[in-house]
Length: 184
Image 1 (tube, helix red, strand yellow):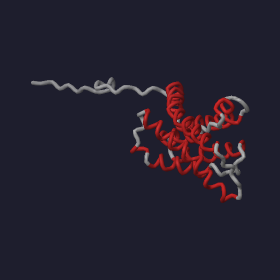
Image 2 (cartoon, rainbow, N blue to C red):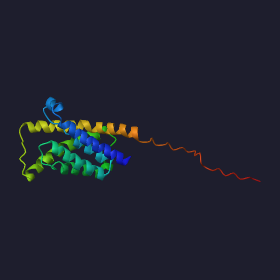
Image 3 (cartoon, one colour):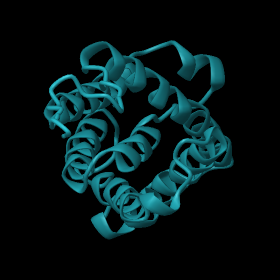
């Protein structure tokens, strides 16, 4: 199930990047692009190991950069750093609580674009920062925070569909041997 779960997360990363790149839709309605990779990295960091987090960061970042005007690979480092920090501290996070998921999604969705913008001058790219940049950043942050619990719901449904249900432990086991002795 571990490999299937990682493959499902990578497939979701590819599909989310592909849907984000389609013309029309939410981009024209909100006036800003919605980025779901930071919220997916939060899900991957809270439920999988560092290898899956690295795969989602590398492939998701490269797919995102290939569809955007970003330099290729600029999104990989911010995605990986956020995912790595969350994954290393996942036992400290109340990952079963919806508010913790939303807050981590908000934080990741705010920090990844900001870190990407900070890294842009190092690549000789000149980012276009205007008054509308704050609106784009706010929309990405709120959408990422709102979508993080939906990743948990979606992958929880997939896990319940494709994984075996755990057997309940009983106090009486059918295969136990009862030794009886004859008392005199």
